[in-house]
Image 1 (cartoon, one colour):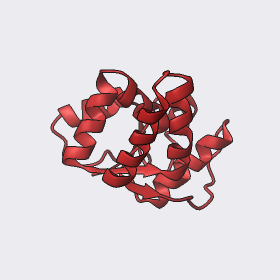
Image 2 (tube, rainbow, N blue to C red):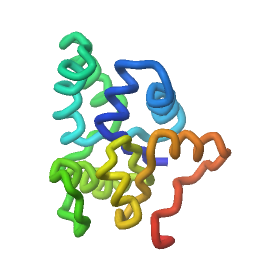
Image 3 (cartoon, rainbow, N blue to C red):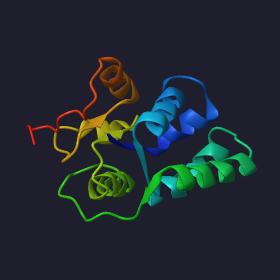
Image 4 (cartoon, rainbow, N blue to C red):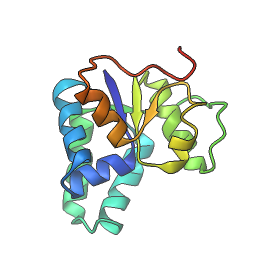
Amino acid sequence: MRVFLDTNVLASAVATRGICADILRIALAEHRLLVGEAVLAELERVLVEKFRVPAELARETDEFLRREGEVLGPGSPLDVQIRDPDDIAILAEAVSGRADVLVTGDKDLLEVAEAAPIPVVSPRGFWDLLRSGADQAPEAPGGS
């Protein structure tokens, strides 16, 4: 499965223990991790400013994700209305990278999940999907 992780999931995975760290580990070991340039651009700042991670660890995280994941550039514009324009770029990267699922804790992205062209799920929703024994991506809204 091609798994796109949003900034908040990656930041939590690096800075804390818990479900996001487990999701990152499983995405790396059992699936294809996708990360977008927009996510990486935001990640270092979030790690340092919000999570108070040392700048060196934030840079190492960026290098690690670039080495171990598939880094996606900007995607084509989408016809999905999202409150935060930064989230439009995140969703466009995931779609253009043919992600099977976008995992995010971002409320704005989760609110438009039904209108998104790919499945958008919370970390808990993705974890539940994985633990249910499903070895395929969730179906996109509308049965695509």
